Amino acid sequence: MPSHATPGGCSEFMRLQQLDRRSFLQVGGLGMLGVSLANVLAAEARASNYGAEVPRARAKNCIFVFLGGGPSQLETFDPKPDAPADYRTIYNTIQTSVPGTLMCEYLPDIAKHADKAALVRSVWHKYAGHFGGHRYALTGQAAPGNPDVQARPDDKPGIQSLAMKYLKHTSAMPAGIMLPWLATDQGNGASGGMGGGVLGKQYDPIMVEIEKATLDQPGKMPSFRVPEFTLHPTLTANRFEDRRSLLGAIENQRRQLAVSAGAQEMNSLYTRACDLLTSPKIKEGFEIEKEDAKLRQQYGQNALGQSCLLARRLVERGARFVQVNMSRYVTMPGYGWDTHDKGEQVMKTQLLPKLNSAVGSLIGDLAERGMLKDTLVVAMGEFGRTPRVKKDGGRDHWANCYSLLMAGGGVHGGLVHGKSDKNAAYPTNDPVEAREIILTILTLLGVPTFVTDNLGRAAPLFEGAGPVERLYS
Image (tube, rainbow, N blue to C red; front, side):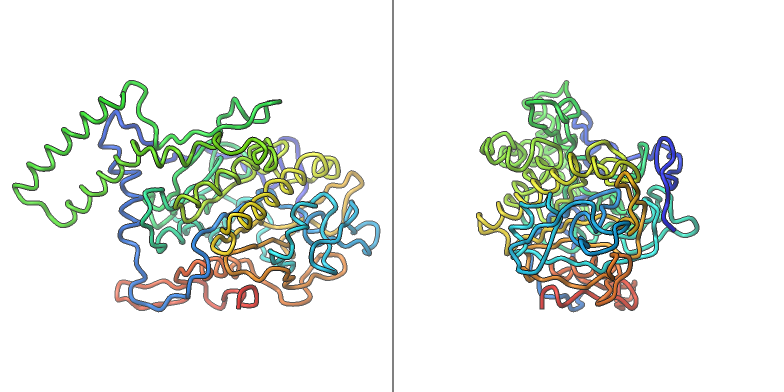
């Protein structure tokens, strides 16, 4: 059932308790390397497919843009200009670069790249609360009992962590990165699917955070910080190198006594972790201010636009999966898509222009650089909005039918897969269950879509579900 807004948040909102996140790396105590960055590196080093057959990779990288809050399918990728007045899109439509395919009038930059992208207009699932929708759209699993709870220790891994587990990674740049904040419903917790879940914290992505003081400041471009690559304020680079040398001396003594293979592996991972902290090449990848000023303006002078530009820089330098969360929480002013009320104004002036500039520029930029064929771009939320619109242009939660965009990475450009009914309420052709989108992304990346037990026996990741082959075959 659709949900309605209540003061301070939508009705699905449950008071969050502060969720303890892993401690950020502080090199003042080198022991912290053993529980964060070094563990991520260990996960990459041990990644394998256990000998089972895996799909042929069509994409090398993925930039996953998560539109938290639930964008309306009717005001984005599946407008219904001929529907009855209480249902049709509240804006005009425009013709895309694909004849006969329409989009919202406020998405012109995306529309001109429709020939490079595929639209899926028939996605569905049954979890219409934000926490439940986030978790299911990103992990393919629901939480036992009440699905609308924040991240739990027994959560299945998010799609980024699933990819990180198996993607081969040889670059010094971390394989998995998330920016510019964790996504949630409301409050300070995190949604299920933001990390490694039961796989362990070694599969959590590296966080890149927006500098809050630069967020939406007139005349200022947002800037970012990477806590895990930051030396402790009292620790200079020279002092860090001294400590690193001391650590090396201790490890040499230990090796002379006899060191297990596992300890040797961890020593090399310590070394790699230290290299990350002092590598000019890694640091340069995060220096978004080196980008052309005109291009930065094109992406948008906001957190979403600059995050998408930074994501391009990171995959260009070896990152394999970068997730950009448009909103920190679903009602975040100017970024959250939970448009129960005053939807017409909020989408027209804030949400749609940001989405248009960021994703439109990302697709065009990747194409111009010859990177789109190897980089999969996905833009999607956790669900859609109710077909019937309110007088102020607001719509409520609707998981029965929504739409998304995929581009590059082996996806057929110009394709529209699936069809919704005349009111965009239910799929009528080629329904796509949300799990199938996860499987499609993993397949395009060449990641196994099965799990194995201790005896090496394989079973499907999601029983009865498969990738949407028409998107790429």
